[in-house]
Length: 93
Image (cartoon, rainbow, N blue to C red; front, top):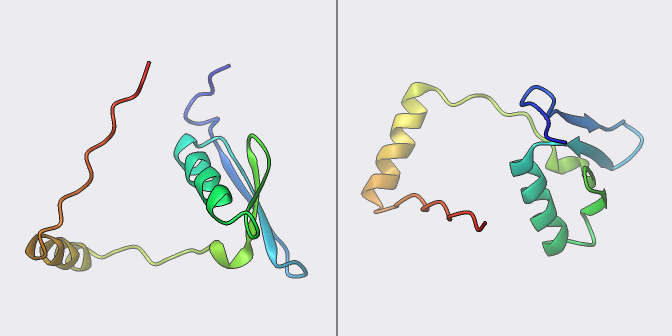
């Protein structure tokens, strides 16, 4: 069953007593990232099932949004350094 974009929610659960957080997600990009991290760091990140992951609580963060000036400065630094964004891979059918 395909979920609508509104139904593709992500829930973060953690408490003050434990050092880990549970991430429940239907976001395909986040699931892919968490799956890759679980393979790379199996001692720290585990996949309970298709949509549930256990991560160290320190991996969960909320950051201040970039200002327009900061975004522009970062873009100019990247251009000056010759950075080129990655080209998206074609999906295999």
